[in-house]
Image (cartoon, rainbow, N blue to C red; front, side, top):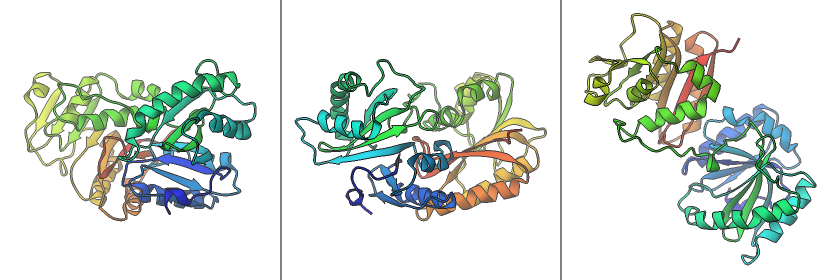
Length: 364
């Protein structure tokens, strides 16, 4: 279904952002998980648009959103409750119809923050300048109308204005604690000049997105031990090293010399897919190019045998049926690991045809 096929203002549903080209995967995930939770609807999307609307006319929007928490979604960078769609608005005055739509939906409630953005797509990127200008124009008007707090308040829902075109936009809400804190759901990370490869950004983003601040402080401490399987040229090893972990880097290929010179790294020229540690480690990370089910099975072995306590690994996805493959791999891992674990999986901004999986001991 194309973006323009969805009902306009008043439809109950969700607005989710994703990587361009993965709209079918996100649509399939939302449909399957919503149905499993007893919420029936349909996805409205267009390949390459960078977003999906899951529409459930007549449903309780809050209940639908609670049934699909943001942190549980694999292909959604952001999850918002959809308020209204404004199409064909007068480009000389976008503010008036936005305020009118919000007054109709929000009543006297004030939002805690305003985010004006656009999907991460080739078609929408030229709207970045308009998004900044519209944000500057509408912010004081919303405050005067009592629709926006005088100062940003993270305890309150945030209003998102998503520009699809100059005369076409969506209004949506981010619930506190159940949405990405970054505009467009993308944390902006800059590659450090000493990073051995761009893959370092993937692990940095994984720790930032999949762990909260307290978990990072507790689980990434100096003196902990880790293994990096398929480590060359050392991007993920370097990230762990910078957190003070002692890393065993397993790869027949070479690591960058400055990583070895910095200390705290043992390089073993062995097959990372077959190697096993002599004692239990705090962390295992793996970014090897292998069939996803084979990777999931091998990662499960590490937990079944008690070789590590936490892990981050990537699953390289096929070109077709990627949501199905993702669900099969996560189920295979959980089944073969043979013990209670907490899985958090996400297609990160720095991922390509892959997803990143974080595994932690089950709470309690």
